Length: 69
Image 1: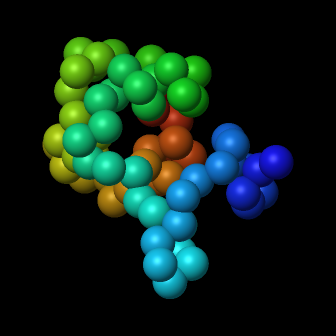
Image 2 (image 1 turned 30 degrees about the horizontal axis):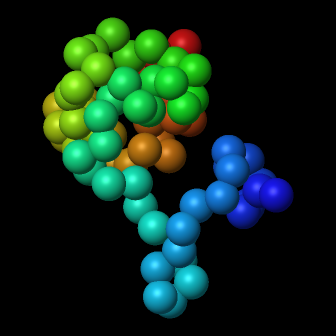
């Protein structure tokens, strides 16, 4: 069962019911595997650092961009 349209699997929620953000220390290798993308970075690079370096606001914005396709 999916949690919301367009999502892969279930995501945990905060106490107020909002979806929990992906942790900034998630490794890019994990993101690449989960979304079948290649961002051409070291697999141990942290998501937060990648987003900051590329001026991207969120994982959602990254996934909906053309990066790594």
